[in-house]
Image (cartoon, rainbow, N blue to C red; front, side, top):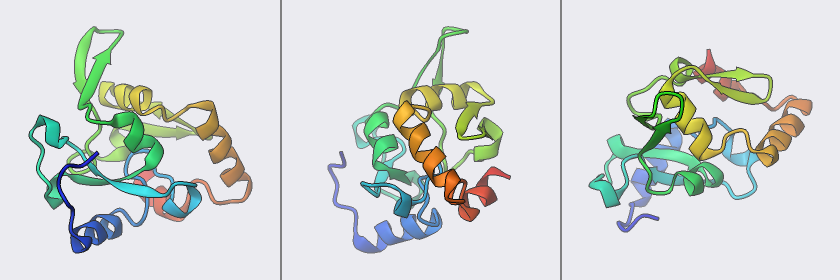
Length: 146
């Protein structure tokens, strides 16, 4: 949870830049029950600033799971890896869409998927229902994926 007030104009800039998509799992804000929130990529707890370059648009599920974490251990290597950073990383370099599942291509993708719980059964059901309606992946998400 942010300690610093984020001005409306900055919130709108972050939302518009993300095209109303969660910048982590790429679900459209309008397709989520709880909408999206502003996320500090590097949390204030860890010294992150409330500036455009440190803010991302995140669905409530991704934001809640991420919390103030900045990364996790890759179990296979026992090495720490930071999370995906939508300001410096390209989504398609770290993830790929495998039907309704999001698969990792890198250690950054692996820890982000695991900790943000991209493939939780509830999220898979949500994506399956949206896919059945022809709404997943969205046109906006496809532009990021490809």
